[in-house]
Image (tube, rainbow, N blue to C red; front, side, top):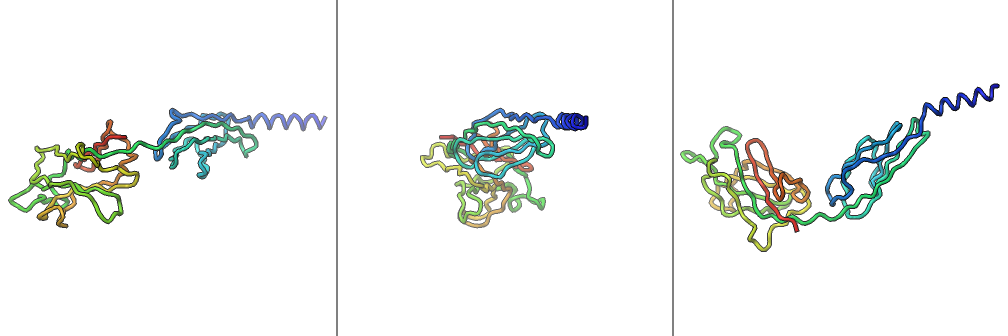
Length: 235
């Protein structure tokens, strides 16, 4: 009689700790290097879920997971669904394909808007002049040298915008490399591009190789009343 009672209690305990069912939900299994992959657990009866991305990185626990693959390849993503106290578990797998991203080449830098005065509320140029002489500097963050758009566009008023610098006909177009870039809007107060007499109007830090475009071929950078566009082609 006691044996039957013990077996019955075990059956009740087991029924309170059901078998998890692992499940992975995603809208995409093909990614490029540096892009963020998004996965969601649709597991049932799981106390917790653990992700293994298949690329040697650390496992991650959570109902949803974002992951960036840094090398091209084919990876087996695994989701392990565990019951209370990890007594029971189930696993689901998914093949993720990661390819090298196409190279982006800069074809245009375009300025759409800017603040009419600096942070001290003063005009950008020496009175009676008021409008800035604008150039753009761009290059890899931490680099010792930067590129400058040339020539400067002098005495730029808001009603002249947009202004742009075109690289589309240049044979050796700048490559938007897969690192952080610093792109600055400058008021050229010197006598030439090489003169270090620039006032920084606004500055942006962005990885132009992986930034999501605002529309095909255009990355739009916005800060306060400043807006700058990077136009590119992919090859």
